Length: 400
Image 1 (cartoon, rainbow, N blue to C red):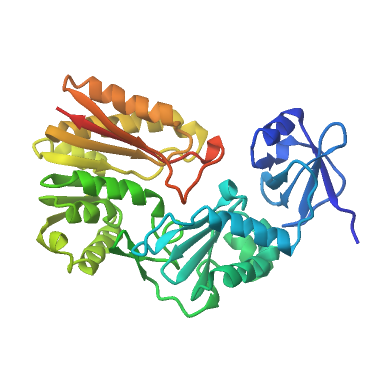
Image 2 (cartoon, one colour; image 1 turned 90 degrees about the vertical axis):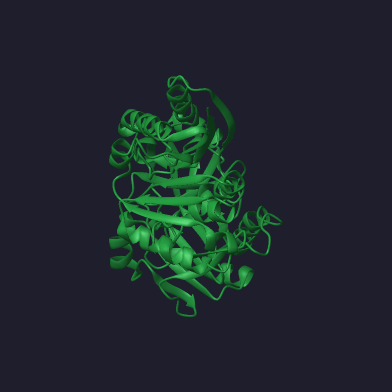
């Protein structure tokens, strides 16, 4: 039997680990006693040969180790994993009412499960892996989830960068059923009593954008009597909440025909809600930047800007900040007196301070009065325990 995999890392990596950084990159490893295999436990020692941390090793990724534990040595066994799962699930106790059946059970690194996400959609669970390091212990993880949560189904979702390796070495594929009843392409679940579909087999992320749930609820509370524009609407979540909140009309704007069609189906799912049935709904297929620039004579009382990530890497940060500023400027130009702008960012490489500062600067530069109503970050089921995990932020401004 091979000796345990031992690593020593740079002084900077040691400091980062003690400060809560959950990753070790290939460039930070200065000593390694042997070649490691996918998913093997790697033990990290400090410069004085003292135990520092342990994590899951991935020889195929520049993000070489996903940290499981820092501090005193611990024995990693089935009981340890069960306890770690119970801690994550316990954080969600009492958060959701019975009319919410779609939410996150495990949020990766921030819940102590680095590179692994588990989302609930009614009776179906979507298990997404961002690293192949979980694959050797996938059966154990699924067994723990089945034992603790008793789902009807568990579906495997895979980050694009590990799909080929997963198929070649482990015989698993994206959208594969790991346990239970066969899952239709779309699963219907509830969010604060509204019904939505999630494409758990092929949809973006794990099938739906669960992270914006509480911002959608906030928009519902602001929408009464207002004409609402939902730019980058995807499947119409903000619009449905606005409609139930008494919006006079909602306009869904997206470049994707598939997204608009999903929004159509979600509205149909909620036609029994009187406010939704009464609300006028318009759909526009267009590039949001172009449409906002070309329709300056249109006016709305509430505009939601929720674009996809503008900066997927650090090199795109400056360009993204400019794009957020342009979006805010264009949207404010379409806002009526006393209108509300809800500007969101899901770009981790753009900090909260940079994003809020950009939107505030644009708003104050219009010459119109501006009242900051609210800023929000991650919902309780999407905790962020280190800086790189802090991707989601939204700012609400009332423009005079």
